[in-house]
Length: 170
Image (tube, rainbow, N blue to C red; front, side, top):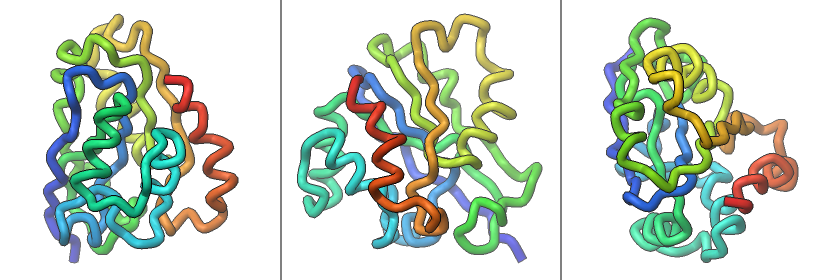
């Protein structure tokens, strides 16, 4: 049985330069209402390295450090049906996309969108991009990056860093 899940609110400041979009938070994140809360998720160590903050900071301080570095957080999918935490368990057709397109005009400094994992990239391409005006992503680089999830065990932290470090340029 799949449950109807509601995602987390966006953490995006008006001066955001890099918007990191996941697919849909896992059970650990939803239960504590924090992005990337699973203890083996490599998101916070990677972003701490890119944005130069201590990954051991309390969650509100990590969010503040990301925003101070010009990074925002949200997910492509705002609501879906899923049993468990795996993206592969999301029931196709149950996805309701977050209103990201409506937020883009309010982000004049946005220069990059980082899609955290294959499901985020797939949902972005299938559901969000077709809704956007032709010029909505003009001047914005879109990166489909390997997932930081512990389910992506084939990627070590070092291997993830080789892909994610491109965001340090923004």
